[in-house]
Image 1 (cartoon, rainbow, N blue to C red):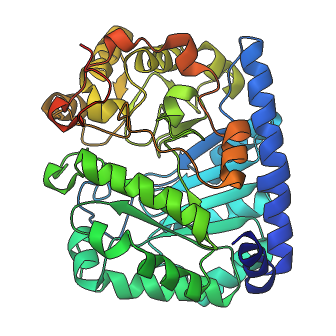
Image 2 (image 1 turned 180 degrees about the vertical axis):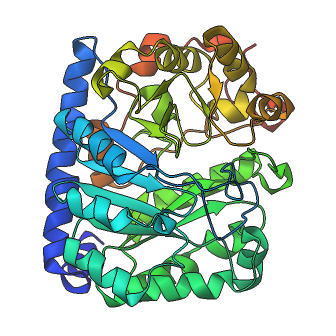
Length: 422
């Protein structure tokens, strides 16, 4: 399987782009994680990976979206984006996630990529704005991988994303990216309506046949103004997705991303561990894209390194979350977010200004933390990579208190597993 993957990388992508990814994402990315570990030992903090939502606008209206896509357009301007990236680069960062809204609706997005060719960008996109001209420019720049969202078959995808013709337009963008030999990924927010269609070998084989190099299956989170909890997965379905990811990694020549488990299958939250934080379209620094609360901004007068080191809100978010669960706090313990917001006077970072009421309305449910049902990695490569570069960095060892864990769905606990702790 590893030889097949190596052959695909060497024959199906532009060699220059492959080298660029190997250097900026691979070598420099591992170095940034190493610097993160050294900072933690000194009692300092700066996340080695940043998400930037560069714009709130989007041409789609997806179920469960938490972004104010229909509100007046607001974006991070080129100067502010470049300054933020430069300050992160000075701390060793070399990999950035670009989100929206729809990032390609930002009129100057390609200028941001062009101004920072020494780092690598992963763009979360619906693919509708990836024309041949855009794909050709991305190939010329060499430092961008589009991660294109596919949410189901033609009918389901259109239903999930609130428009007709969404699936076809997405596939056209995907094909344009592949024609230009970009390093292309496909992601899916797995929910009740697409789990059977996309979490299977046939779909992965199709992606491989098309030339897609990596995929990402993340579970649907019922958040935002229209959360649609009926789409959320059950605990059994989440275990099914995790098992599928582990098996696919060990058997298929395609890279499978997983942001919520370590090498032994222990659950983790990248925001709670400090691996990543998020910058919203208004410049607010949030724990993660779905937690729209902040006390700090990239527009503050102090340097970004000071902001991350001195932000009491972000520090207590990491500590308080890690004390109570290894899972997703917004799904399991929205009450903790309400407590933090009140304590620190955190502002609602949305245009709709209804986040507090939305959190109060959340019905707690299981997320990736399912104690006693850990599924360890089968692939030796993934196991090594996670041991070194993607784990909890000692966070839960310092903070997690099992006596504080409150299972949001005790009825789903399999027989013979760990006791439910209150």
